[in-house]
Image (tube, rainbow, N blue to C red; front, side, top):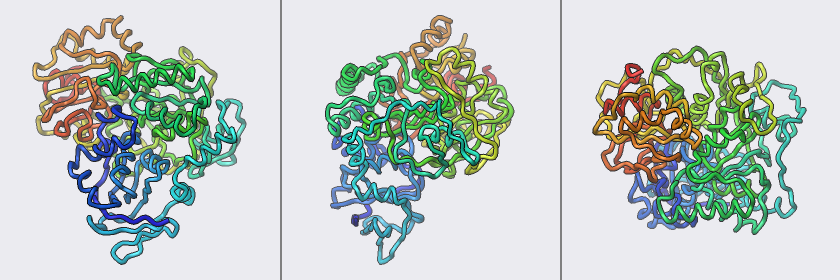
Length: 602
């Protein structure tokens, strides 16, 4: 198979899916062609027009192309502009998976600098050669991925499984008696138990069974459409293991969003699935809160921050629209490669004014060299006793911003005591073996971390607050999102804002992460501190983190946010500036009208 095209663009490092297609259009259609007109809308206004000059287009980029969101619409947008291949030094894991299932050829190259815009390129997949300017450039690709590209994606295999009724049933990993003859990481053990055979990092798994699948209303309508178009009016693989959550755009801000929500509700009724209604909360909070996320499970969701659930000692990761439709039908993630693991040993405890978000931003900067790309971050060590479950959820949530596929925490007494109150099903803890084979190991002393602030346009662009010499005045502040909208976050924030006022030049929006958290804060009188201070309190949802509604930013706005991403245009205008920090730093800054160290407010 040969692919020919013209190089239409050369991009640098860390081009995100937010860059490729903006969040504000995602819920506006379930038709793939719709997204083509918005391709690179925030960062390259001429991209769509320039793509029309060539019959076939090829993009060249540096490291970590397609990082950030799991939005498969990014791949749709590229294909609608006749992009037939992307050549990059490395790819974000979910984006690459979305390329595989949609047959957009994605190839890793060693040196993007040799390519020039306007030049012709020919790719011979079978020979693994790129022909460019009289040169033959070899590239590496696994035989499995090569076969998928040559066969036009994974859809054929999935349809065959359905025809032969090779469905998955909920896996009883609790009864597995797999004993490896080598030391294993936590994730190697979990996957081995589910697949009923000994596995190690790097091995390819044809069908990975999942325990929990959840969809939100951004990706859900497209997934439902794909599900019925590809497989007909069949039933989902399990009524008890699939959840629908309305959280990103609620209450619905447009008619298109409302129609998508209606589709989700009808699907839940037809398939007899549990659906969380508008205002119940964010998907990465409510399922764990209700006892559905348990140690040892394999959890997938149509959102890149599904990795949040790794705080509960389970393997959790995001998938795209098409993979979710496959999983709805079969209960499998197909052609899954078991990732390598980086061990992070935690010691000590945080100083006053320092929190888990600060550690997350510190690690995002540390791993900005691509070391963690596609890997599992396994957290353990004596310092875990100083990290609450809320704190662990924040760190796990941000692991995708570190380039990782997911994070996972060792279980301990803190997790055990929590699960005693809310668990719905039996579970078992997974610990790593001594001398497990890790890609690398690092040690972190929590006492050496100080408050961090991530400057635009990416989370890894973070600095210790003591190193920030200039005054950063703000116009907006946001306390919320799946990263930092938990009870503990609001408790800390309330201690700062009590008997104080929001700066008159700042619009401060606060959104608790779930209805249960909201009601608890209400009962305890904590929300009144924010109301009396002049904050805007909204019902549980993703809010302006997603850039769709509830306070999107104008041009020249400058916000400090407890959310997870600060890509250009992420929260509204591409001319706005987004700074990321801990809830304590966010609230202190909202009061001061500028970015400040929260220590003096505590």
